[in-house]
Image (cartoon, rainbow, N blue to C red):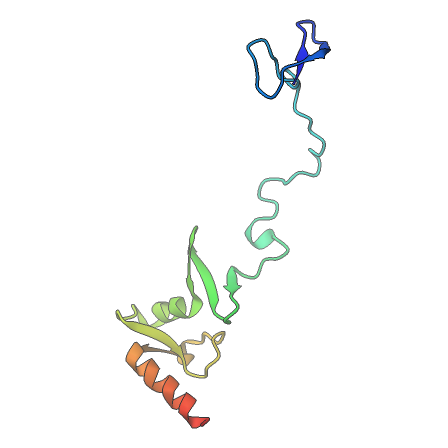
Length: 132
């Protein structure tokens, strides 16, 4: 740091070193913040939600082709679970939502079925054994 005199000028001959000492004043003390782009800054509620150009209807699709929707501010659930619960009621404990046609993005209520994990294992092993 370069020492600053009381009149606002800098004393270039002396330096404070790597640590501040008692009489050392930071070089930017009293200076106003440089504000270069106030016209182009983000305006409040300009690109939020449906107004954003990348808005996809609140649905996120992950790499396994599972669609997720936001139910609260910081909580998301699989869209198939939400559609099933809205249509048929609560999903029993230990059951999962199965897509009958195998398309994870087809969340039509007639395509969704609540099955136990044991039933899922039976269905998946029968599919695998057919190809052998």
